[in-house]
Amino acid sequence: MKPSAIYPGTFDPMTLGHLDIVRRASEVFDRLVVAVAETPRKQPWFSLEERIAMVAEATSDLPGVEITSFHGLLVDFARAQGIRALVRGLRAFSDFEYEFQMALSNRKLAPDIETVFLMTSDTFSYISSSVVKEITSLGGNTVDLVPPCVQTMLSEKHKRQDREATES
Ligand code: COA
Image 1 (cartoon, protein in one colour):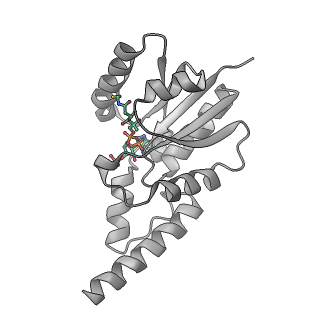
Image 2 (image 1 turned 90 degrees about the vertical axis):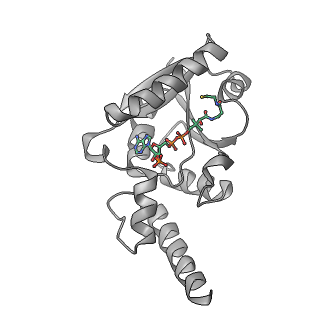
């Protein structure tokens, strides 16, 4: 039997790069829990409920993938789930320092939990949630960067931003 893993993130919003990691991880692990973090310090564009909904819809065709949210320490959540593997995606060398610090911090907190890194497809290596949000704010097209359901949510968000800007 293949083991279970958690793929944590803020997913504000989920991109095709994140989806690529979910697909790859779901082929390695029998059960993959995609854990959407509240991350209030990042002041997300999308509410926790919206982010859960977008991740659930984008991954609905993938067997063994579950979506949930968590708050508090990731390792506490992993222990509560009885899961000992954390998945993170690496896009480029620039991700390494941040991921290295997070993986070692998690190991210090919970030596029994391992972080497993998967390489994003090079097609998606330049995508980030911030880039997607910037393009949306400036009226650009993100169709090649995010799953279709996220594209719809981004368009609605942009229309709302435009309306608010006109009203103020
Ligand atoms: N493809 C595309 N983009 C990717 C990506 C991939 N494969 N992997 C990461 N990214 C990008 C995201 O778009 C995002 O970009 P942005 O900085 O422009 O917004 C960034 O990398 C990271 O976002 P995400 O993957 O959603 O994760 P995160 O770094 O926001 O998640 C948590 C961090 C939630 C996992 C971490 O803060 C955590 O575990 N929090 C709980 C508290 C805790 O336990 N702290 C101690 C551990 S240090």
